[in-house]
Image (tube, rainbow, N blue to C red; front, side, top):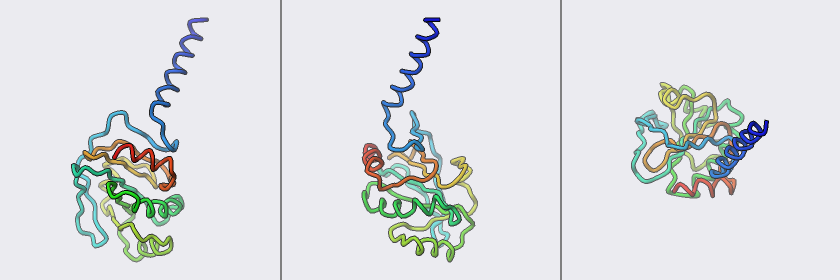
Amino acid sequence: MNILKFLILLVFFKFNFSIAAEPLPFNNIVLHKNPLQVSQVKFKDFYLKDIEVNKNDGKIKVINFWATWCDPCRKEMPSLDNFSNLNKDILIYPINLEKPNKDKTRKFYRDLNLKNLKIYFDPEFQLTKQFKLRGVPTTILLNKEGNEFARIIGDINFEDKKFIEWINNFI
């Protein structure tokens, strides 16, 4: 019985200390121990012209997937808009996961007073499949080499001091 208690305590402490070694600002952030390889990241701009993310430009990329009908997206987008001005070494790509509808998307931005974010689309849902998204909002964080080092499942406050300090560790 003592061996069993010892093993349980050992697992408990190992698990808790391994989590403590990587403090995350929010519990809905998944930090990958080893960054995941990402193939080409292609989507469309507001005018439906092709955009391809430069993987090796030395900048962190924030790819935020959202939809106009999504209340948590509506909640987090203003903080993402403000966050986009905080650090020019972080590139932000908010990608609407609906069939492209410029008027509806423009109205969403106007209603939320979003002034800094550009509008992007994934009309064929290629990125949705590539990143195996399960819902919105979902944010994929790419490191300077263009590989996924973390993802955020659900909404967060991008202006939260804990998040800003955490992400600045990757710049």
